[in-house]
Image (tube, rainbow, N blue to C red; front, top):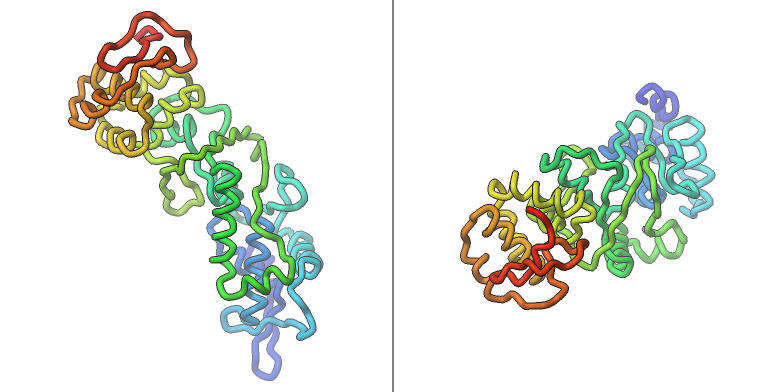
Length: 318
């Protein structure tokens, strides 16, 4: 990539001032990114910032004073030349040239997903695999993302922050907005997107674009959506194998964010199966409610065998 950049972006010196074309400056900015791909919104944001600054490092950016940073100008004078030189490449998994691979960057499906959707994170069986909780290799990548309403709210806040002080100009130039990009595969990996009203708990992975649900949230997700975690039988196995090791994180997360039925399932597994004692588990038991739909496995039929303490049907063979 460096050879391409040298050929493409050798600055010129006019009257002692180093000058560089805006497409070349953008190419250099892309080479400095840690992410594997760049979206049309991110290209637009970087382009707009360079256009406003009129400078990249020690070089002045060559821009005609009559030029406006329109979407047409961005497409014709920046994106098309970068594609022509192979510095960026449109990815077929994403429609309408909205996501571009960056030359020389390692391509990883999970990192691409977290780059394309800035509010998403890896979850469920994929997070279990990342944390070493399962030996199963997910056939799909499980991706949690906010509800459509919350996604738009987060996007508006991010755009306002990204264009701080220049948001009015951004709207006037009608540059690409941050909008949700829909995709079902990345690099031949199927993607399962789970939208929830619950705000996710995730962590950023150093040196990558990857975000993954925390240990505690991953164990909560197992009880909330066991069908996305290899089935409730697999969830029980994971609790048996790793629940004691991560009991504090599990109890902390479920105590804060679990519903009553999720606390009942967790309480039964932690207390009855793993023999873990904690005052908060006792509090969960004191608040349980009876009901015919309360089952250990939410996907299996109700059984008459049940736990008196946790008021749930033990509808699976343990």
